[in-house]
Length: 338
Figure 1: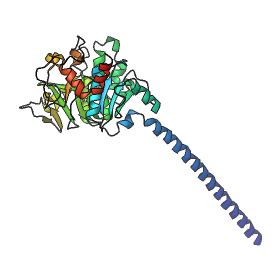
Figure 2 (figure 1 turned 90 degrees about the vertical axis):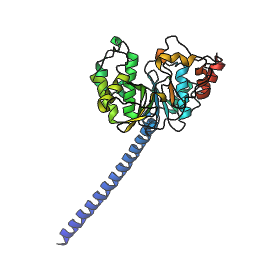
Figure 3 (figure 1 turned 120 degrees about the vertical axis):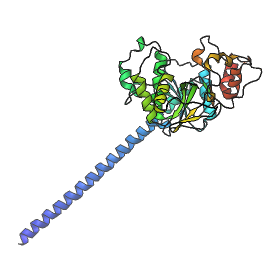
Figure 4 (figure 1 turned 30 degrees about the horizontal axis):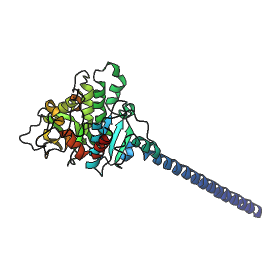
């Protein structure tokens, strides 16, 4: 009996020692795992802190883009971005560029901004690469992008731009602006589309939240009705077709904005007080400068500018006055280097 008791006691001690050892080992392994995981997430978060998803996580960014490989944007593009940075000092202003290298460190970020001296002093301006193959993932645009042949597209630069702006809005939300749009004052709504003229809805300036259902419908319509050879069919055409189908063609009875569902539909005065046939007026000398009190920003119709007109210091043109007031750093840079 005594012998059996001793054996049981020894067995119990062995079990306890084994359990304590195993628990201690697992605890150490768990500690090591936790340390490794925390180190991994620290590295991951450090890398992500330089990504667009982190900068635009609040969904309040002002988005611009360049869909060619050009890395020397004209002064109008720099003015558009600078004017937005000044009008929206508390919001990130992001310029997506197809020709830009990946931004994965603080050094990359500084190096990218140094390429654009007029923007480098604005802490709310960010530059990120535009990678279409990644941007279109998990959207209706991906199958279209995989099979389209850019070399056979008449207006590829513009068609790809039309697609990218919708995808950017789907992914990040915020306000999208063309790079020939000079900001004057803050847009009071975050959910809006705008009329270019009475029967055409613009895709040059619009604002929506990320993953907004209307944006998804824009992408679907882009693909289902694709006619890349028709100018504007994939841009304003998409917006006009979708809105008209959902709510009918909105009508303005005054210069007041109207509603389309639960989003604002802006009057042409908000961004297009000078219509595209009169685009040269921006490069004219005005006896009395317009106040544009009913406008939040001005679209300068750069696509119409086949003559290559630009802002000339000392010309006293309307565009010079806009540069002086809305993008003074860009203006001074041109003045010093003329």
